[in-house]
Length: 234
Image (tube, rainbow, N blue to C red):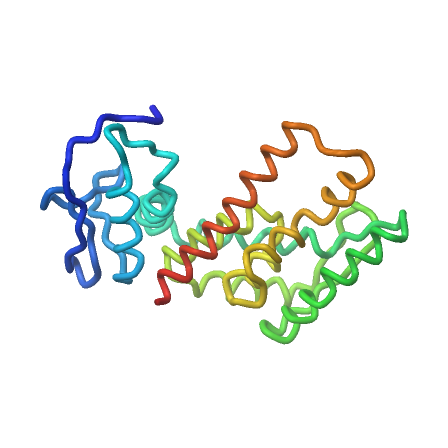
């Protein structure tokens, strides 16, 4: 179900559980698992409440992205934080930015220009040097680097980890997702880096409707992860 009838008039923010919750006509907003939707940041709670205020006579679930991501963090990430962190950290073993094209040279140059500075950043930021290869055959990354990146991921609080998971899955790269959440890249830059190969192909051959729709969804996910983090940390 993507729509349901609106049954409330007011959406407000109130202190709750050491953080901030959203109320609908005074009743606490709850997640799909029936937990109170409580977040540590008032700014995020206000943004969630604004999503509910903006609904018309029918509630569109697609128009509640912050609500959905907060609920994911509460219902799915919090009770299995270590498992989610391990899932995210595994991306480092086959990270997008470590696999380069051998041909055409124009694409190889673009990849190096966009991705190598991010690998260098990760090396300095996390003491996690990553190997780069040409082609798609998997290469083994240094164990110490994988451990360092896994530790960095595991240190994220549950709600931030939910945003990191979203960004990593959307970009196909832990390095890009970390750079996005740590402010090394903005959402537009992260999307461009993640979609570099696809954008190059589009320049050559054009873009079909299915690919265009997929790219919009990925761009929305990356932008949502960045906005969510900004609100959490405000």
